[in-house]
Amino acid sequence: MRFIIDNLHKFELKCRHCTLKREFMRLYLATTNKGKVREIKYYFGDVDVLAYTDVIDAFEIEENEDTFAGNALIKARAVFKALNDENAFVLSDDSGISVPLLGNAPGIYSARYAGVDASDRDNLLKLKASVLKQNVKSTPAYYTAAIALVSRYGEQVVHGWMHGDVITEERGTNGFGYDPIFIPNGYTQTLGELGDDIKKKISHRAQALDLAHILLKGSYDK
Image (cartoon, rainbow, N blue to C red; front, side):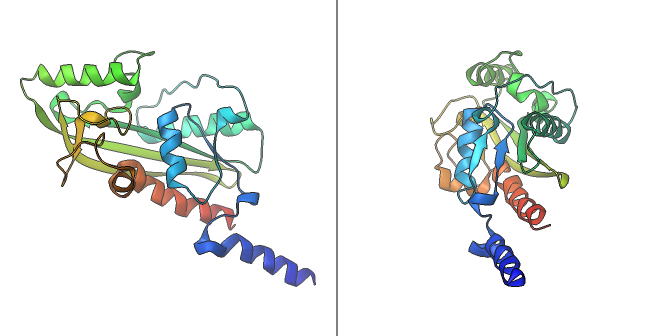
């Protein structure tokens, strides 16, 4: 009887196209950015996803690494430690936009390009102004996403990229951050104009989350 129960338990973990059973899964996002929370929840429709602030108070995390991967790990480690839950899986995203014309700025400083307490709007306006100073209205750019996954099973990081152009005309409201001024390669609309179904397929974060989803399932099956 014990053998049958144990195997039934394993089957439950691997069923539904290898998705994770909600009653066994706790996936926390190491972010307070509502746009990111919404996007990641949309992507992981088969898993219960919570912002870490749903269970503990928000706290400051110093991001002092010089890479997206390094900063993603800092955040995931800090939240995993603060949760004090050995069953928790913590997912952290560090992402940003890089413009070669501007020396790949803002890069890892994308979330604070206009200052430490800058809003998404402040950052977008500064990027527009920086591009306009170069006497162009459109220039190549690319997004990078690093996704860190931290749990009792270890630490892992995956990446995704999306290339396109930054423009100086804001278009669309379906998104956050720099979405209204970024047109991905192969499209004529900005990320602010494209629907979630399309962005889920092409975005830098979607590519990284695809890999993170695989790692998440692999970690839980250990």
